[in-house]
Length: 148
Image 1 (spheres, helix red, strand yellow):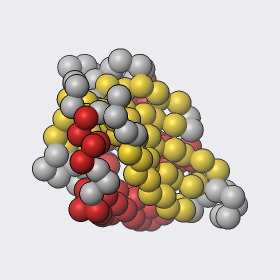
Image 2 (cartoon, rainbow, N blue to C red; image 1 turned 45 degrees about the vertical axis):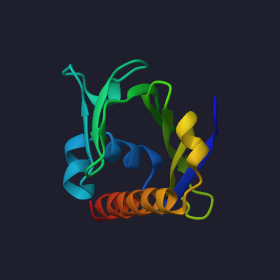
Image 3 (cartoon, helix red, strand yellow; image 1 turned 90 degrees about the vertical axis):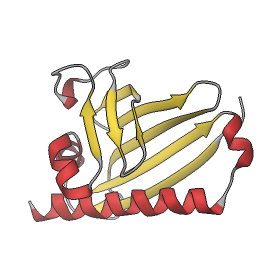
Image 4 (cartoon, rainbow, N blue to C red; image 1 turned 60 degrees about the vertical axis):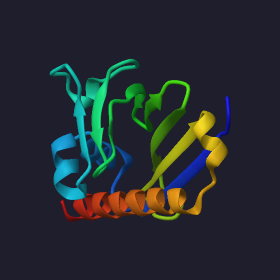
């Protein structure tokens, strides 16, 4: 394996981790407020019921893929998207009690990339694109949750 290359963003949200997680798992709501399209692939399963191995359909606004769910717990949701032998990305969404905002949430997105493609990283443009997309998602989710 090559890598890993890790990219991470975070934001403080004035709502409980359970509230933020619930909003995140409302995939129709996420699409409406963030523009990211996340859906369950090949099943009528509810997002809160997803387990390891279930598949998603994800479109981050021009970047579409079908990752596998690795974890779906109250404090952590992880998917793994990959092109076998080329790149694998484990994308983590953390819903942690805030240490700076009592009753709030520290929402973190982190992705660990491995594979041969990471030999060409770190590329500032790749990290900047990811940070821009993720920070926009974080801000939109924060606004949606705090206005509800």
